[in-house]
Length: 246
Ligand code: NAP
Image (cartoon, rainbow, N blue to C red; front, side):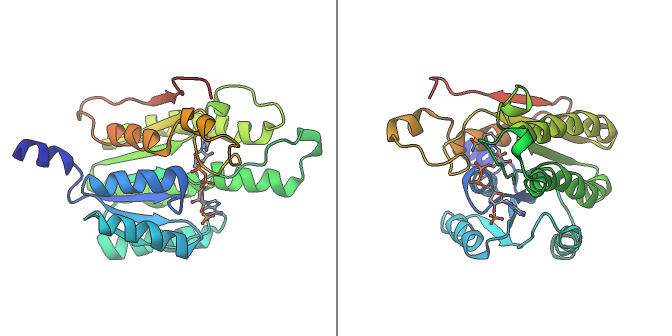
């Protein structure tokens, strides 16, 4: 029994920053990492939603703090880094989960501000967050960075070209920065799920269809595996598919 309890708290003493933690996949990842013993820094723009996730984590016996941050604001990301540094002095896990998409529009009709929003949140923000938190990990000689991409970053996505491009780029960023940081005992991985049952792509008309999709907790389980691997090796990429086609 003691062995079981120990394995459930594998992240005891660690600090995990999770973006997009207000709902959906990010909230599920935050809840999972907190259940494993990490102090989770929940970040997104919606304070009330973040407070709800924190309350849920605390009711389950975990620890979390809320740090509101608009990831399109470089100064706000820097402030987030300073807050985490002051409050905890460490960052063991960074999960870049926040993402936005404008789908259903051919590229030649896409407004430039929609292009910018996807590139800013899906691609530039992970860069700025790595820039902010990798130095803390290097100082601690340990870290995991997990970027949440998409199967749209491995395949074509007609009428979602900009979203697809942002995720293809995120994959390339991940593979490259993984090579830069492995010398510091920092493992950088990417998770590319297919359609997940969140409000991201619109609500499904049928509950049966929603149930066949990948669930947020399934992605959280993959992240939990990635941040608890044997020290001498790591899985650098996970493609996550639904068992039954939704
Ligand atoms: P979601 O439910 O819409 O959640 C998106 C999260 O990102 C929210 O917490 C949102 O919080 C945050 N966010 C958006 N813009 C932000 C900004 N400017 N600054 C800070 N935070 C921001 O989406 P999800 O389904 O959980 O998706 C999470 C990730 O998985 C995304 O990267 C997405 O591309 C990827 N993904 C999703 C699916 C899917 O089918 N759902 C499939 C493959 C990959 P606020 O609005 O409060 O800021």
